[in-house]
Amino acid sequence: MNIRDVDLNLLVMLDALLRERSVTKAARAMNITQPAMSNALKRLRKLLGDPILVRTAGGMQPTARAEQLQRPVRNALAQMEAAIAPNRAFEPATAERLFTILITDYAASVLMPNVVAILETEAPHIALNILSASSDAIDQIERGEADFLVNQFGQLPANFHHQRLWRDRLACLIRQDHPALITAGGELTLEAFLAQRHILITQTGIGLSRLDEALADRGLTREISILTRHYQLPRELVAKTDMIATLPARIARYQARHLGLAVLDPPVALADFQIGIAWGALDHHDPAHRWLRERIVRIARETID
Image (cartoon, rainbow, N blue to C red; front, side, top):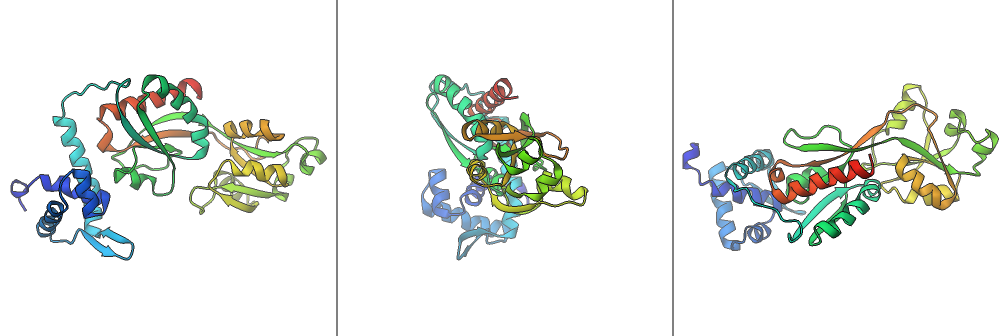
């Protein structure tokens, strides 16, 4: 295949089809008719020698070949747009835009009230769609379904960008009148900690937490009775049971003030962790996107870090 023989508009169509996984939705996103998008899909299938999208019980799904193409196509379009797009001015006071942010409720509780307060005065017509960050958050951004991910990061794809927002540490949330504290003079010993039942906050439901990994290094385990994705629920459980929840210290301190709970260091040494913001290559040069992410970074570092 010679690239000179390829209609580059088809790459734009391919990007929309893989992002929307629907001919009708892709046509709507591109502001063209459904027959026109169907024709583009037919041409792409002939060009690539692959069905691109196949119908399944769960709807249209990309083929293995299409999934391999999705990231390179999006990166290529992003680079082309950055190269040829004019330097558009962004006026936050008058701009109308909806941004989708994938974020845990812990990070949202710490960050978003300050962000929303600033937007209310500086960019009153900017709307935020704040959704829970799940295990497929990276894929959602790559498909164009979300603009930002705010969370702890492991390994990000090479085409992603990210910046640090703030640091935090883990702390234990426990009732002030918990028997383990009373018998130990207000201290949470390792022996007492391991003797209790625990609440684990996990975004995936699998794998070990940093705390459990530290315990495993000592040949120790704890009994986990509750697994949840939510950061608000554990405080209610802790207040009414003898369970212990280990969660970020910033939200633990806030929750403890309202329910008569104590915040203590875990009985094993744990390093601090970082919360950051990440975004994909396709939005990197967009003026509105850049303004908002720079504002979020500044707000986090001025009010949290």
